[in-house]
Length: 123
Image (cartoon, rainbow, N blue to C red):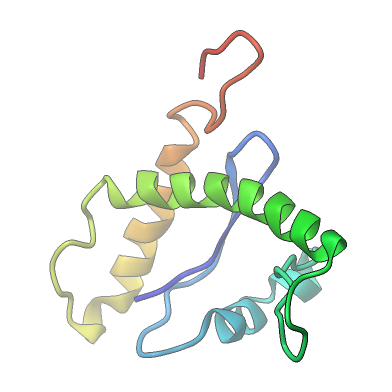
């Protein structure tokens, strides 16, 4: 099962999609979740090489900027997984309950403090 979360600058989870089954792509989850239309947010995707031999200096800078932010999303996802609500297989008939558990796990992470260190070196 896959879902989409959105975080605000200090790391609190501010958007939680439903969970999706099967081999749905991240792009399709983003489209189905409605976050781009309903919330009016943009999507930052790192540049791809495509037909160029190497990245331009601007592409390298953009990739590094996005990667620094992506780390915070990965930490938020790890916090959700640490609840171990989803370690066993669940039947599709319990999908509604699983979505509720997922939402609770996401919201509980907001009470664990910020994801990043502040200027004093404390979380």
